[in-house]
Length: 332
Image 1 (tube, rainbow, N blue to C red):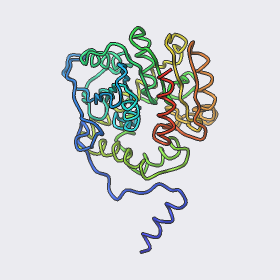
Image 2 (cartoon, rainbow, N blue to C red):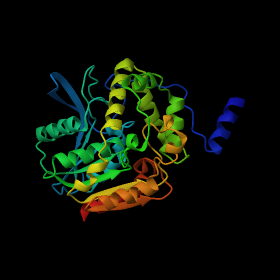
Image 3 (tube, rainbow, N blue to C red):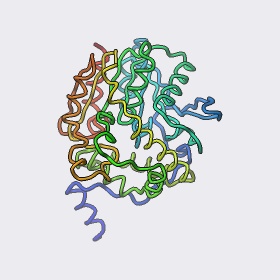
Image 4 (cartoon, rainbow, N blue to C red):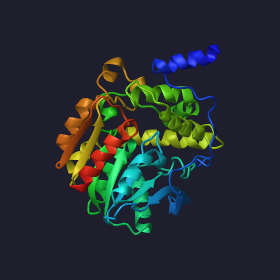
């Protein structure tokens, strides 16, 4: 009785709900349910056979002949695009939501030289396999950095580019964030637990708020890390963090040619390495309310939409508003 009362009070004051036990999932997220049929693209890369998990969802409404490819963030998967996939499909788009190598339902190679160019090339090979030539690209968080790289590499095939709270709107290492080695990242990732992830996401992704529906994504991430692929998942995560930190796209926003939309939750404070940055450096990082408008001005055909009071994932916080904004912009 006392425990039930304590949990009820915690919910009333806005503290995140605590899951009884974190489930575990396979090395390629086996056991976690995706909202649409999951397929796998088999290909060769860097001398080894690899797989990319993806969903290819046809238009449910009247098909408009256009396709949208969705690129997830670092702590996310293709499944987290669930409501956006449905909104785009209903609006007539074919939607391809991809899990990049190293993430979620895709391969976790023991040896891989990660670069945004390599991940873009992998995605391009998948789209060629599916017979898709022209796309609109939507990237969230780390997926925004990848979407930028993809648009720079394949400008003739990207008709529009949209980014949701992309990280990489600043160059953290140039601003004074200390370097963290792959081994240090690996040690950190091995210690991942639900409580730590939940608290980080509450503060950063949801501007201090929590809803029960957010818990699913905590369990997805932690269940993958704590499953039979524990070490492989942590190792690939470490390699990916190194890629993110050392391969800025900030200096090339000026080279984007296509109409580009920045969708920014202004309460976001995500910044890679801010936890080890000197206080005077940390105080200057992750100010999305400022970064969004600054970067929109750097992009020749850039446009900014601000979701006031929201954090890192407005597509999860307020999916109806987010999806309406996206669909209206794509339809122009």
